[in-house]
Structures are given as structure tokens and as C-alpha cells.
Image (cartoon, rainbow, N blue to C red):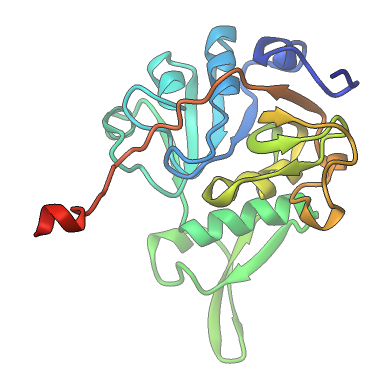
Length: 239
């Protein structure tokens, strides 16, 4: 299947748009909905001094961790350090700048960037270090801190399916930050598990309209690693 937005692989989709010091949004929550192939493409390209906007920074040995380990990231704008020991070590040693956000605030800052809203007010973080240096105002007797939008030079997102026009459908929890990030980048690249013919989607089922998506790749395979596998015993085992 061919189309003006479809590229052969991650390296081709990233060609001509990368530069040192750029800001990149990367979808995913934990290891769910990570643009695995585009992250690996960034590692191969070696672009440096990156500011990465993402809920977290992958897990040991996987996802955005590989860019950290390669010395390509200078700043993270995140809500969770998690179990990523390298992330924690680099931050605590002063080698990585971190702008830590409450998770809902991070999501809304990204959504605001895509919606063209430069600032908004929230009660979250009032009276804490989160509000340090930010305007705080009173509305209806309560204090609110002003937060600003987040936008990026490139957004890389992971979807389930796309059509040649870039309309995207996400699958279950992999939807997470991806739809909002897709709207907030100057250039948005989506990697998907399958590219389907135009007209395959009911318009009501499209999560990200193709107008937001500039480039698409179809990933050859996905590991879909589970960060923490939690199970319960089968009934026969309990007996």
C-alpha cells in the first residue's frame, strides 16, 4: 500500500527533521503504547541534547531508557521516574534536568498545546514546590496555579491501525498519552501495527484525525513487554 504519508521504516520517517537541542513528545504509559521503532530510530540517528516530554522514560534496557543510556537526553518533562534506575541516577547526580509534573497536569499541558491554549489554571500543586515561581490566583475563594502549554518539534506516537491519510485508531490502554501528543507536535509521526485501506474506519471510530499526522510507518513486530507482570493463581491451583 502506498501513500504520501507512508514511509518505509523509522529511519526514513525521521530523515530530514531531526536537529540537536530539539523537543520531542513520546507517547506511552509505562511500556504500554510506546513508539518502539521510532525510539530505536532516534537512537540510531544519535541526535543529542534532546528534551523529551513523556509520562516516564521507559524501563531498564527498553524504550526511552535507550536514549538516556546513549547520552542523547538532556532534559525530561515527566510525571514519573518509576523503576528506571538510570533515570534516577542521572537526575540525582545532576546530569539530567527534570521538570516533574503531576500526571493530570502533564496530560492537560499537552492537550492545551494541541488545542492552542497557552495557559490554564489548576488547583493541583498549590502550596507545594510544583507552584514555585508560577502565578497563583484566586477564583471563587480557592487558589489556583497557572500552568503553561507543552508543544514539541516532533511527536512520536504508537497506534494500532492507520489508513493512508493518517487517521489513527488506538487499542485499549495504549491510547493513553498518544492522542493528545499527536495534536501537539509541529510534525507528528505515527507507528502502527497495521496500515489498512482508506475507508476501512467508521469515522466515529477514529481517535486521531489524519490532519494531525504527517508521517506513518508500519512496525514489523512489537515486543509489547510488560513492566510488572501481576497474575492470580488459577482456581485449580488454589484448590
